Every structure is written in C-alpha cells, then in structure tokens.
Length: 69
Image 1: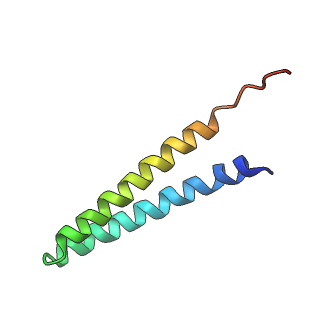
Image 2 (image 1 turned 30 degrees about the vertical axis):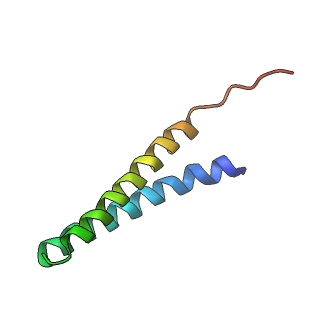
C-alpha cells in the first residue's frame, strides 16, 4: 500500500463525516436561529471541504500514466 491507496480509502470517510457534520448543523440551525450566520458559515466550509475531497478522490482514481525513461 502506498500513499495513494491510503488516500483512496480515506477520502470517502472524509466525505461521509462532512455530510454528517453538515446535517447536524442544518438540524441545529432550525432549532437555534440566533447562531444561524455562524452555522451557515460552518456549513459552507464543510461543503467546500466535501467538494475538494470528491474532486481529489476522482483525480486519484484516474490511473497515472507511466512515462518510460
């Protein structure tokens, strides 16, 4: 196993944890209107992290061509 194999297994976990955190903040923001801007900021941050993780995962899934020297 190299670094790319570890990242291929780790990125889906990061995506799932991000979705869980996003859902928790969405549920909490319904009950607590006073902290809505802060929770909205955290939700946007988690969403950006999820998008970066998905793009990185897709890039890692594409096999890298080997260049003969």
